[in-house]
Image (cartoon, rainbow, N blue to C red; front, side):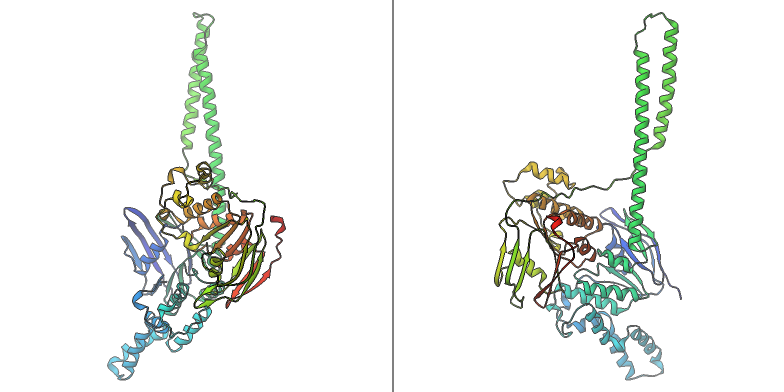
Length: 546
């Protein structure tokens, strides 16, 4: 039986700002939809309204008796003392179904047989008799290997996300709403989730910053822009190509329009000059009626031609097309002579409950290094030790005298600091060259007038531009990037991609984003597993970048 989710003229406003404007769409069996749009476009708002977490202002949502569930983003503190397995069973309703079945089975009769059948149907839909096996299968696929009797409060942020993903998948709703499901997942877990969702014959709406994940799952695109929704019946990468082609077509039309308007303006200007010349020219004989009449006729004719050209100009009208902002990513790079290599010998880093094995590696200047490994393997701990944010336990870190680090992390990009853009960029230093600062701001399309805006009020794309401007201002030559693609919209992602492509110095990166890693094109991949570090050299030659 074909069932549809039918959404009709959905509206939602916040503080008089229209977020969703007459949104209408149908979701059919097997539709796996990628929901795209810049941060603030209303993607999460739409998912919350569909799932019932948020009230709509107007419009209708018809589920046709189907179940719908949104991926939760966090676990309520009241559930922290539950064990992992109890939490999953409670949140999927399997616990209450098991209790009801047991009670009914102990006193089964004709009067409660119908109720028993209904509850058993729900239990079977959740594959109740294999439920614990399914928990282990899904959590294992998500690279979660902890004891299921462990309490929720002992889990890391990434481990909690995996448990919430397991709850969604095991709940087996007819319609799944997944808001950034790959955040905090390592590559193996992302690929497992991707394969799992691809095999499911269910309706889905997915929001994600992982473009490869979207492309491998999506069958159509919903695009939210300025409160309106457009549907594209194509996979994600086809949609991206279509949008690029559409932009280039509109850009050509816009340029042709500009040229045509300028041509008409030039012709009008020439005609006006010719007319004025005829009117203002001094006659050899003031009583020469022939000359005077000729001048009047020329002025009259020219005036008619000018009016005709003006009418043509008015017909062309104006265009609301906006060209993309072009940013020059020639970061103000420090290339002072001197030692810019990094040498690490027998480094042990960590804390009370976690320590790495001795790490030895050599990072000559210009190398592109990818640090990989599962969640909790110690990747970020190693990076923070390298940057002296965490004190090393033992070993040596030899950093060249001319190394100048630039660090961006996912925490940097979601920071709620109250600093202004100016304060954030200058770190309250008094010796900043303000001329250089405003030149750099201009290069990254940050207006001088915006210098006193709060950093916390900026969009992800604006924050990314500010952080790239800061790298340029600080003249860094070693970029350290820790999961910088999390929580970013496509505008901000493209800024990061361009910066990585153009940067001439050393890059040390942690990322689970497959497209980012492809663009980074590392020379060496270091893998941290169980505190041990192994590496493989890639075919790419680094000499060409020096």
